[in-house]
Length: 363
Image (cartoon, rainbow, N blue to C red; front, side, top):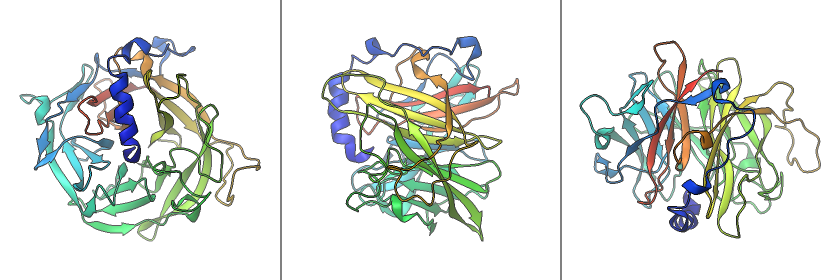
């Protein structure tokens, strides 16, 4: 969300202190005992605003992935002309929620910084992150949009091909400003990669926050050592749930997470000035959905979107969520259930918080 950051800063400043009273009512049909996802602990771990590591300020965390050693990598969206980078984080996830490692403080959760060679906040807007089994990092930048593969130490290895219909800078075609590849997830097994535009492409639908926004889930498949685009499916981002005046407001698809068996989880984030943030997670089924990869414009065409089911609403969480953007699998719990870890992007704004949250997964 970096290009919209100025407007978001102003909106958050105006809304600060007023978000909690305007928390959304829980949606019907999600009784606590039946929720596929439920909060672990009582709230988030907050990384203090003054945290630094490797000479870098910690903030702007837009995606997260769990590494083989149990630490986590989180990509920074951008910060002016400072180097693009990934932070390595260490924290514990348990039935009690998220906590620093034993003997450590929240300031010590960031343990290393990995600069991405040749990139800074002007030419790279990191938003999605997936880790390959070999340890290489796949990172999406939303402004072009692009997906690149980086070595574990931050060197560019290759760029993935992106279908022309997504590309920015074309009148009436491609992504809208900074509404590109906000999400990235590698399916179990490492052979399928998913991303999506945050809101509808210009040629697919007019921008209307009061109506569903058809975005394209883009599926890559591994071939000859790399990934190539193979299919596209329509996912409809929800209309705004909160209504307010004429101030800044937005809703989009912030992240995806591939589940075993082929379904996906989708993280939608909404902000309305004067009302605050609404964060929801949906389960996606592709069964029966139309592959629209050969359709240049969805306008006036017939297609069947993916099916989506609400599985968690942060209005139930008991705390005020910040700008949650990233989602990844965490460690298993002692009873064998899985966990999800989510992270928020504080936009390097002292009015916002870097939150790390854990949910129990029962799908």
